[in-house]
Image (cartoon, rainbow, N blue to C red; front, side):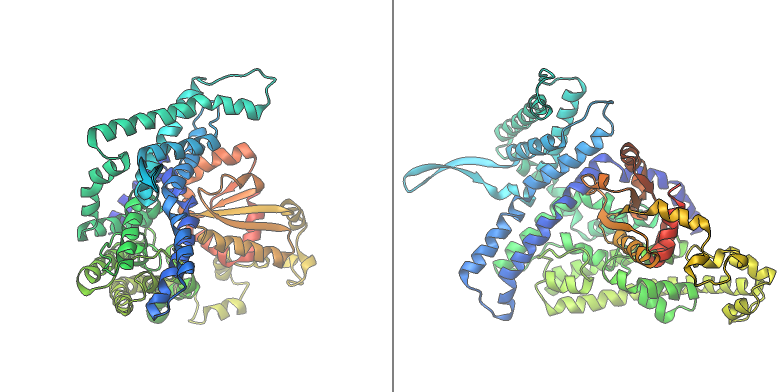
Amino acid sequence: MDAIVKMLEKHQPFFEKISRNIYLQAIKDGFLGCMPIVLTSSIFLLIATLPGVVGITLPQPLTDWCNKLYNFTMGVMGIMVAGTTAKNFTASMNRRMPAGKVLNDGSTMVAAQCSMLLLAVTQFTTKLDGSELSVFDCTSMGTRGLFSAYIAAFITVWVYKFCVSRDLTIKLPKEVPGAIAQNFRDIIPFGGAVIICGIIDVVVRNLMGVPFSELLIKLLSPLFTAAETYPGLILIQAATAFFWFIGVHGPSIVQPGIDPIRLANQAENLQVLLAGGHPAHSLTFNMSLVGEFGGTGATFIVPLLLILFMKSKQLKAVGKASIVPVAFAVNEPLLFGAPMILNPYMLIPFVAAGCVNVSVAKFFIDNVGMNGFSFVVPWATPAPIGIFITTNFQLIALVFVAIIILLDAIIYLPFLKAYDKLLCDQEAERAAELGLESNGAAAIAADASAPAVEQATASVETTVAAADSKPVADQPKPAAADSKPAADASAKKDVDGLKVLVLCAGAGTSAMLANAIKEGAAQTGENIASSAGAYGQHTAIMDQYDVIVLAPQVRSYYNDMKADTDRLGIKLLAPRGKEYIDLTRDPAGAIKWLRENLD
């Protein structure tokens, strides 16, 4: 097993390169930018439909109003994703443009939305009260048009790059204001992108008789059908967990390619549910609640197992520290604290648990009568609650939850016990080397001058209080603020007024460190402001910060981010897994870490 993990670790740079693919990044970040549409529209849909579950009938005008809000948000998501994907793809492309040449992301965003409409939407005329009306078929403006949105975005940005790189733009005299001149410079690439997509639309409609968006769905439908089988679901889940196991954020690689069909299936499930049928699609957006039950690796039950059944001090401490974050699908404290990432003992259960979960879910949907997921809930919703809601409050869903919790516990427990035994042996060996009894902490306190203890103190992690590492002569009054060395005072000036932005994949893990920095600033009296965000949604606000910290799950984007932060004069920091988790638990240590890394 160690040999396998070493081999995977050796190829980690290759997998990180995949995760940094600019097309995958643009799709992921573009979709993330539209998540407020998904979540907000789902709220109004729940308001309109869920009262009927308990026999309450809402006034029809209220139901119609909620449905209208849903249709005018989720119903046009494809158009919006075309714009946000183009905007993020433009940001990546600008890093690769020659000096002095920049693509206008506002213009590419609008051009991509127009191009998407050409590829996905059908216009026809109809008669109403004797008058002819021009009508748009809105079917592909939403989730069915996502593939067209991505293609429109990529075509648009490449056309802009071609034109701007070769100065194929309309040039005006230098006396013309910059904003006006920019509008004229964008005419040729804007027109080129729209014309190319318009030609694709005409060719496809004349040759195939369907819009481009429908052609894509038909061509890819065999792949989607295969993805919704047991092997397909297992492969998707195994790949997601595998990538995370080797330290590369798995969802960022796997999910962008399947998000369009997952959302389309979930929308179809909803229509079937509202019509009184049985939603049968299992490959849906919120299937991640099952496959990533408590975070990637299906770790929902693991912290409780650590607390109840493990003897190692390390694992018990990790269990206590991670039980609340994991309940909300933020499992990095567990992944890097245990650790589970690149841990040979954890490879099999980390990959297998999610695969078993999605297989059981498909069995329940196909054979037991559990509804396929229909309502979209936020990713941080505790998985048992989210599953209950999105299956339309079916009691059988609670039975399903209980079964997968039990199965995940059975899968993980033997491997955790084996790992626990290893750690217990290591802890006993360390205690023996230091000549300590079981109450080792008391022995250290009683004999602080012993050489062995000095050696132990030197190996303490960064979460130890700063005062503990000072020479005895420097701290006659350890609790007094004026006992700090003069160097600390100068360091305090360095961080005064500092603005810190912490980024992760979904703004969950980043919030942990951002909150620790806020708490540490309050404790130490520092004037430091910290915020959390999701990587990909930072480009418009990053220039407002002095320091940007990348969480371990987005550390593979360091080089791309470094180009932007160097250009803006921002300090970029990227702590590794365990160091990051330690900082989230030690507010004062987080402030000290910032000071030490601002040189």
